[in-house]
Structures are given as C-alpha cells and as structure tokens.
Image 1 (cartoon, rainbow, N blue to C red):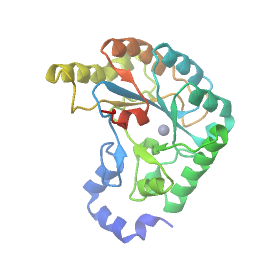
Image 2 (image 1 turned 90 degrees about the vertical axis):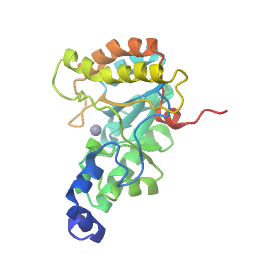
Image 3 (image 1 turned 180 degrees about the vertical axis):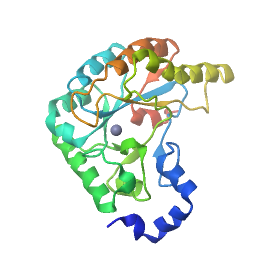
Image 4 (image 1 turned 45 degrees about the horizontal axis):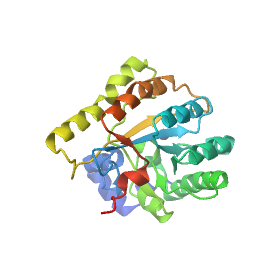
Length: 254
Ligand SMILES: [Zn+2]
C-alpha cells in the first residue's frame, strides 16, 4: 500500500505541495528532520563520495586523497559493500568515515516506513560485517526524503547528511565541464577570508561527488578523479582542511 494515501499528516503536507517538494528535495531543508549540510568553519571542506565502493575507482581515489592528507566520507551502497568488503576495510583503515546510502539505492520519497527500515538495516548489516561496527552517518539516495526517512534513520542511530554543492559528476561530460562547476568552493574561501580574517562564525562546504555508480560496480568515474587532481592542490593552497563529517561538525576545544 502506498503510505502517502493513508497517512493523515502526509496527506496534509501533500496539500501544501510546494512545501512538500522543498522538504523532500532541497538539500538544506530541515522540514522532514534535521540534516547536516555544511561544515562549521569556512576553513573546513568535507569531501563526500557516494555510490561506492567501486573497485575501478575507489583505490585510485584513496591514493589521491592520501597525497593531500585529505580525509573524506564515503556513502556506501550495501549490495556493493557485500561484494567488496576488503575495499571498505581499506577505506576505513586509511582514516576515512563511511556512511549508509541504503542497500539498493531506491528513491525513498515513495518508500513506506517498512521499506525505508529494510533498506537502512540491510546496508547497516553489510557495513557492520565489513568493519565490525555500524556507521553513524546516513545520506538518502538522490537526497530524497519523505516525512519518515530521517526519523527512521535517527531511530537507528544515524545523523543525516546532505551537501552544499552537487556538481553532477555522474553526467557523461568531460572533466573540463566538471572542473568549473567546483569553482564555488574556492570563491567562498576567498570571500570569507576577505570578510573576516579569523574566519569565525562562517561555514564551509560539503561537496557531494561519486566514486561509484548506483547502476552497478565499476562505473567510470575518470572525470571525478581528474577534477580532484585539478582542485586538491588549489584548495590546499587556499588553506582548506579536508575533514570527515565528524570533524566538520566538531567544535574545537577552547
Ligand atoms: Zn547515490
């Protein structure tokens, strides 16, 4: 049964279609539950990679991140974790955070509470089997939420994470197309250092890229790697620190 048709509050929300659409897809929306979408300092950049693990890309990406001492957060698809548990272990062993991106990458906007729970639990089991402990972060596929996605994730112990920048690296375009779409990150750093030299009170970006493809293992992510080869040294030279989501929301000790 489609729960949209039976839930009273959901029906009321549907009547306010504009608000519902905003709550369901706008990455900064908190209408359907709290979600982290930025870091707590303009000096902190959080790189996130969705839809892996991907044997054709993730190992190269891990080496590239190591070169810049960059720690990232990987939102993994459960069915791929089951196929490549060693790659997930390697990712965590190199200091990166991993998160739950569901078992099969459905659009949760149209999923019932039971379906949402199953998708999250299966992925959680896959990651726990690979790493020995469950992940703490969750990102809904396509960023799509309905009124029960985040409450269920929280009930299972997760914090939800969205993004400030989604450059569309899954599109079949050359790296020359992708590289300028990451420009807003550098622009924000330059603007924030002009505005406030000690950078207090501002926020930094959470970038959403993809090291895998939800359609299957071994998706081609050459353009994503090329764009990072271009930007990582430039971001480092601007003084950005590459931190996991845990670090992105941690307040420094005074
Ligand atoms: Zn995804």
